[in-house]
Image 1 (cartoon, rainbow, N blue to C red):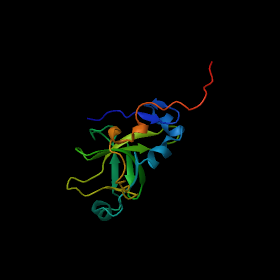
Image 2 (image 1 turned 90 degrees about the horizontal axis):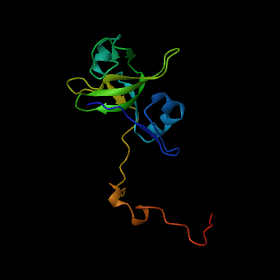
Image 3 (image 1 turned 90 degrees about the vertical axis):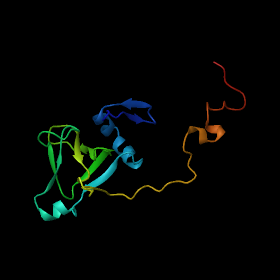
Image 4 (image 1 turned 180 degrees about the horizontal axis):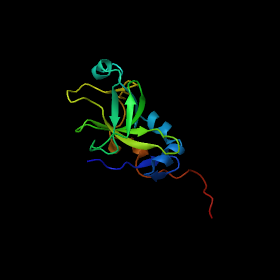
Length: 157
């Protein structure tokens, strides 16, 4: 089941469900740098794209992939993928605004039924840090709980 993502701005400490707010506040950079979202390209070397010069990837308005597509993406088009839903092989993609509109969200198959990819990641997988803590219990004891009070004299009210 698809759920609506919530976005957190860690420095401002602000949470929002509004995509436009995230994009206008510089959140796109943060989400791409953190590899929460991925830059992908509609694979120009896919067999379907090579056989048919007019082939396009269909993007739908909802995850059920029914009705008429809201966008048709040509081979070689760069897209921002927000979520990959593995059971259905559907990606939630960021749609750039058209004239007079705001950004939107669409849904597209990222694999063919036989497993061949339609979308290709533009960056290699991030290297894993062997020494990174796996959970909060693995953090050093200084990082747990509350911050230590400063040493020395304290100013009082």
